[in-house]
Length: 293
Image (cartoon, rainbow, N blue to C red):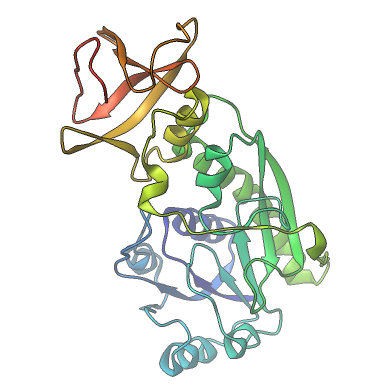
């Protein structure tokens, strides 16, 4: 079974490495040299060069030249893992087995943009790892493989990214032989149960001290590395928050945004409900007790 691989993020690299490790016949790779919107962007050309795999940059994945290059590889299936641009019909129909995509949720729930970020920001306790046959819609094709992934309160974006990646690599081990032998199954999604998450904007990462402490804590977890971090403005300067801790036992008659404690481990700020300790910020943030943020 011949495979053309499309991808340009850290997960793409890990998936391609796993395919090569299990002896999959990858005959071509399409990647991106740079990305202005993927914090986890990875250029796959060094890996391809080391493995002697033909590789091109595909800034327009649907262009005549890119589609022709993929067609010349004569793939039985196309894997599109970690690609933020929609594929058009002529590319979706090019390989006999179609195009297999990946989405880190339990489809049909939570289609759309920034799935790891929204799962953590919303305080979900479970997500998933889903491989599906791509159509012209976003994340709405038949499911090839799906596993559940638990989200623990201690998980931040980087840890959840790794959890889902490890789960997905195990799925690849299982479904690649099934695709090669024709023993795979397609499970249609129940579109009545579907929802779609919107694109995250920078304003979504701004901390409002009127939020509850758990909401702020979840926002910080969601935007932890490799993402850009939650933030607030202090004296005209943006402060990025990488790690926090919810603090209880706080007087209820203190206004949100007031600094109520300063310790070596970080300042504590009153929130709309309870308080939060800022354990790691960039730049380092040492306010005065009683100061308002």
